[in-house]
Image (tube, rainbow, N blue to C red; front, side, top):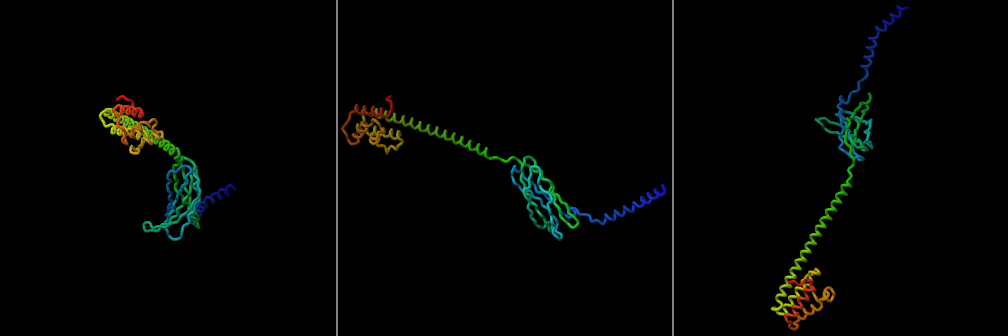
Length: 290
């Protein structure tokens, strides 16, 4: 009995090379799927510029091959979804072009994505398949990394610029007002100085000058005072009207003296003119220190 078992085992062992040769022959009959490289198919993923959180952007993958007859169907079998990236949709566009004398066909898949996180985000390698009667030919794009940043908020910058502009405008306005006030002050000082000078000359000529001419010159000086006081052109100043309207209070008597001189009134002596000069000085607020 033992001898029969041993001889059976020897017969099985002797038959193993025959089984191996049969299996090898069977596998040789199964067609091997060509690779994408063998078929001249390339898969190129596009780059992604930095985006802000919440931005919608496009990511494209182009599959191209040399045209050698029948059309090729390329089907995406994975998505671009990953941490911080959500795929909203995908579109496809076909094209043909000549390259190195050969016609090259391509299909570009554009994935509509939105970033929902900050930092370096990772688009996984998109997988595709080309269906064939012998089975699907797998394709895969390279993964792509890009940066997602916090969206820029222009409101603080705009607010800061507006505040800065307001401060600058206010400062310029204050400077302008100060400069204007200084000019007005300087003009008033110059007017006061000129008024004193004119009155000083009239005082010196009160005894020697023609009475009527002297009074008309005093009237001219008083008109200059009124023009500065009311910001008028001296040619438009009418002392009688200003006194009648109450703008030159207490000037009625002095205006009457000027009217008499203008229309050829009676002759006045130097003493009377000196008193008129003092009256004019008082009405114009000029202290008698000449």
